[in-house]
Image (cartoon, rainbow, N blue to C red; front, side, top):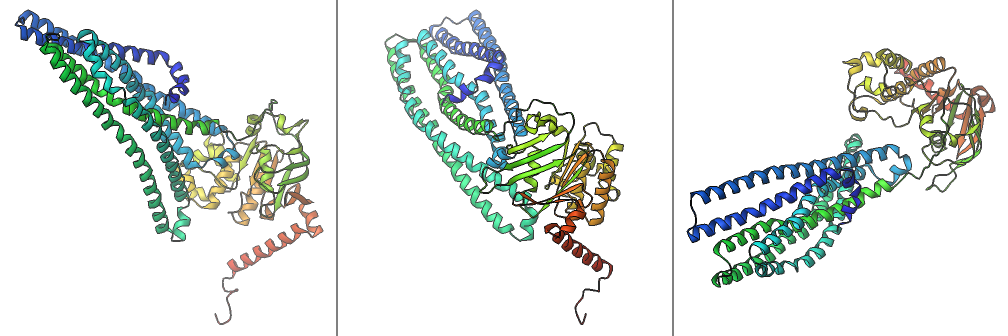
Length: 594
């Protein structure tokens, strides 16, 4: 149960003075708080014995008032210390998680779904913060304050009465232990269910257009109802077990009060205790109610904290399985050389790159083509260090690619992926993401190179136009060109376009390719595409099939060989011509009688 506190010791150690100060203020506050019933007891005894006079009344009143104000000030100090510490823990743990996420590559995110990571980064960390704040308060109250009360009851009233009143509370520990373990298990189950719901909600939001297009709204509503009903049952199970704690504690507490009243009355009758003593003792018991009841809350908090800590540790201890230890700082991209290079994904049953031989000189343009699943993106991922390095030779210049420092490599690469990730910001912000200190002139130049000028003119607020979450308010072609502009503004040593022109028309595609080749004549460019017209001007084109290079050469050379490239290029050219004919003569393709 207390394992979560041991695992958080790094945080308590970092903030030891804050917590030590809070605990000291809480301890002193507890001492002053238990003196108050003692003063009231003496006050009542003075009234009963007839010793009360104006001077004594003034003395007790001043003592009582002073204790109230001192206790108030100390309570503020420890409350601020503990609860501000809880918020600090949330900040530190979320920052740690974010740093971890940003360092992880693709294999890591294949293990964990987005909704699950969000649930652990929000609700589970909040549970840990509750442990560091309210949990520590309850722990001190359930231990330190209770111990202070028991000692004060024994010293100022009677040890025999104190022991008799406290003994019935001991069996409660067994109930707390058994039910606490059940809470731990039930809470972890409910958190897993919450993560699953989170995952499906995110998928539903991302796929809203498809859901509506297929008129599946009602199906998803029913599915969500079922999931939330299941989550409700699991949360109710946690509440059901937790609800047993409070009445159990109150039952044992009631027995304790009954013994205290019965035995206390007997001691008063025997003259062992005064009326003031028994009143003070009852006040002490009343003050013990909250610490005793808080035992149930403490168990619940610590159990939930332990379950949440396990869930958070699972994602922070997990890695992407990649370990790039290169030490050479890459200053520029040199010649890239693959020699009998082979790669296979961990979950794949086939070899995804098979005996790749390739030499790409600095400043050249490489075209990579092939059918879907042929290995185009896999080859690019090796350049980006997104997956473990394959076997064989992969050099850059005089050194192996793996010997270069990974961050320094990525700073030299401009990458435009198939799935264009845009942020819920303006056009300016999305493009300037590629260069931190980019000026508007540089942004507009990258827009010109990406053939986005006309589109920008049609936007009401120009560069300040908000594009919506993930670019929801713009077309696929516009997303691609903003992504290309973002990569171009970086002016990278190597530009990689991974099927990044599929949503633009042929004319726009050729304009972008021409601009890139003109401005980047001395820098390396890699274009992976299904549309072969995009690589016509490449210095070398390779055709991949099942991870192997089956054809290579310039456009003209591949056309002459009349292989796969020739067949696909011819089909695409015919299709393009037919499309252009339709647009120029809309009636030419209508059937007879029309």
